[in-house]
Length: 209
Image (cartoon, rainbow, N blue to C red; front, side, top):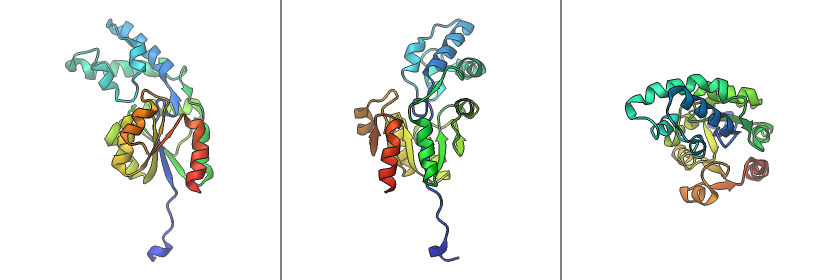
């Protein structure tokens, strides 16, 4: 088959999860509160949920010595399905953003620092159905999944997401719905900054021409 007759792969758009597709703050706050009560260590849950994005290990390092982190991660994750899934909500425009890509014949993937089983629980509970979910990747490491799935656009709310997109050679579309404001996202190199995903469809249709 000559290069001219090779089938075109569908356009793939990647999305971050926390504070991009879902508002997991209520559920994560409840989990931190239950976790703190279980282990007998005070954790400022409001502060913790104000800086979502990096892996769980990064946050727990603020509250526990390094030697305890692996054990504490396991304890927190054991509580997560009970406390975090039900209270968490879809972000405004999240389902429509996935649908907009699908209507154009594209694929959607979720690439998140959250562990994959919990990411899938959230998406299933909220009826958000991407073509693939890849967990456990943060910042530049997200580029591995973006490249593997040939994603040409990555949508996220954190400067780490901007770096991941850049490392993968993907267009960085940032939404100012997480801990990083519009100025931070632009300074980090985001190609496009939207207020939230309710603006995604209009941008997407203009981008697709």
